[in-house]
Image 1 (cartoon, one colour):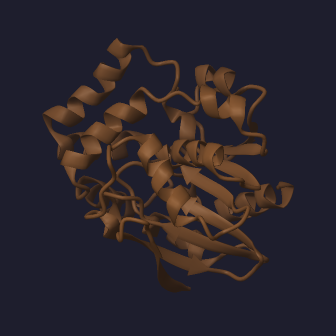
Image 2: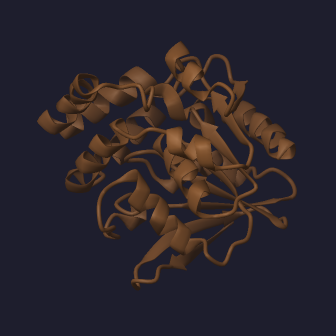
Image 3: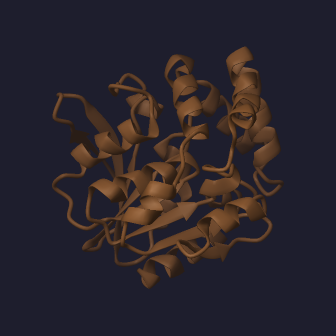
Length: 253
């Protein structure tokens, strides 16, 4: 496992962790307020034949001081398109918001496939304005408390208490001035344009929280794989099972 940086056209840089060996590159994209280290178990146990590259998105983790023109899903995808300009035909794997970024990136760059990890726990594209405001309001009122509640209600019982507490601390440490507008944009984002434009296969590894509305939205566009007994963080809650399932999905691509 090693560290590197992806230089951007504007002179900024994104920190990256590299693991595994193989011609096929897999880019791991974390979720909202998360960090690349939340892929740690997978990075320590990479599937044979693949090179994993886990990146901190702008405003997150060790890239918290990296900025984008606007705190939107599309702006993050544009940033990664710049960062990945010299990497041909990668597989993109995104957890939660990272899946939305991956789908937008696949509209901008030729990729071999996309793997969504519990991306549609919120039914993006089907929230009306009242629903979006209802979800976001607690975070604007008290960002750290809302993050604690998010983790408590969405990290499953298989995630040990100390790891759950560390996850909440990591997420709450993200800069609210960037995360709040990004959250608002994400809640109003729709996958419809990506689903209509991209031609690569899209797979999803989902836990138990994905609802029927989200499945209906993804029907015909996404091949679903279930990881029963997990909630919103399957790669952390059952990392060994996730790694095996992730490897199987990669072989399908």
